Length: 264
Image (cartoon, rainbow, N blue to C red; front, top):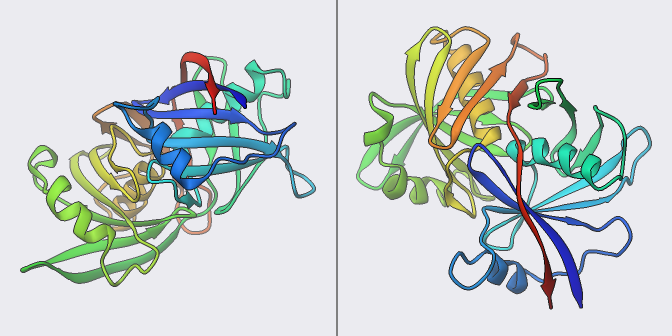
């Protein structure tokens, strides 16, 4: 079976995108893991699948699979790539679409400057919790952006224990479905730096929902004010949130790297 794909990235968070609007998506978890390998496959943080909408009032269904092959609820950087992909492939001529995910309905919009803004929906901020991780106790803010996040404030993000503590938080008993572990540093009233250990993918250059969760946590704790510039290792995102039940808006770039065909 031959399967066309497009390799894309949003602030360094990289994806393989597949159009499954005409044929059912049929890759197994084992096949996804193999394709995600950066040495023996294509290499990606997430696999994004475009399907026909299953609900009224939305344009497409958007499925996300992590590099470990597991399907997850949401991917913000991927949502920006999603709208550029469906327009490039002639699947829609709209600049703004409504997309159904496992984590809820989101609204990516292609802006005139070439970047993409995404209505990520209202967050769920559950406050602060202290968790025992190994031989230390850490304080995390619990945030859902349709997917789970545990966000810490650190003094220096480049020295944060992302690759050592992050995997432990991901599999902590507090989070039976796993969690994305975020580490934020406050740089100013409208400025954060962020690193994220992503559930099922490890540390990535950028995490869109992680940037949203970090901004929500920092705004809720009155550490910053909206809008917030979030610097990741892969680039910068702008996050806006008016608090409460208002939607979180994310803005940033999305680019195509190359296209190819899988021979399965």
